[in-house]
Length: 483
Image (cartoon, rainbow, N blue to C red; front, side):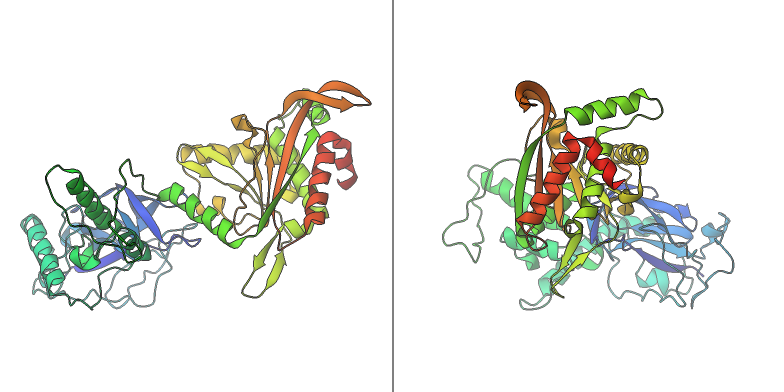
């Protein structure tokens, strides 16, 4: 007898609460094996292939490509023990399989940052649904109806049942929405969906959700907003507008292109907004003569071996400066009202990619040589451009180095990468008039900017850090005293 198991979007780690379906790797009716990737999703940090912990026949998928799902929402259902699944020779990874209370097998493998969880001692059965089968965004029938789980034969619904499902599922959701009391609960589990509806003055009780069991997804709210704007812009078509509680008078719908803040762009927006909201930051800057630093780099590369990047030399200067001023390699715990000074330097660096700005992290940068830093910067930059950075590559930073000089600008006021305490910005290195040895000369000049959390230190510490960095840039021999 086949048992239908539901696989939910797992916790992808590092505080991620949702993911967007980029590409389905399986279809309804496909046979999958344990730990086979079934869907590719994009989180706020990276592209991830999600493996399924069950082996069997895929009976339903939830969500179309482009749909955002919260962690814990159903991804797909698998009929385990179905006749078709036996033909695939489903194997169990590792030793003895975890049979649970239903004789189902899972691998228990744990992947870095995501993947199937450790095998649980017991797994609950899917309770038979009493209503019509639910339908995913692609029109596939969910096999949670009594015929799929509680029937005498335990057979998996066939194509006829899947084809008939969408109409019944949609009508069931509409009926449920009509029966919902005005003061009763709404089928929404994502606070982002509620906020989006509130911002656009939408009553969630008027929407029919496309998620499982009528769950209202972000796509449903965005679709309703889009339909409302289309009707407003159509000539001769009156459209009632719901007044927002905080707005006195008519609501004016802004015209123009709307770009959803989600994925990497949404994560950047949330993090920078939180930084500005929570961190009392201040910025100081100084111009430095980088002529000798550039000459030292040229001499290193002329000596043979792997070429040393300028970013690696700046990173090495930063780690030396943080050893002298550890206040800037810290974070603030406001709940405990404590400054936590961190023993290791995990150095983040800003990298611009086609998906947006990301900040990969070089772990234990304080223990690396210039050659090691160059190699790690190159590796992480290439992985970032390919869009395959893992959550581990993007988290855990304690200090950030931002080389915005590659964009041809001299200065900036960097926003701190929350929850870090400081960020060093480096402008372009260009020939400028400079007083050198008592006379006017053309030198290679760079502007250095330090934004710091004023809770962890005062201007004297921040100025001392920046002055030490500038001294090392102007006279690289100063760095030798700390090596």
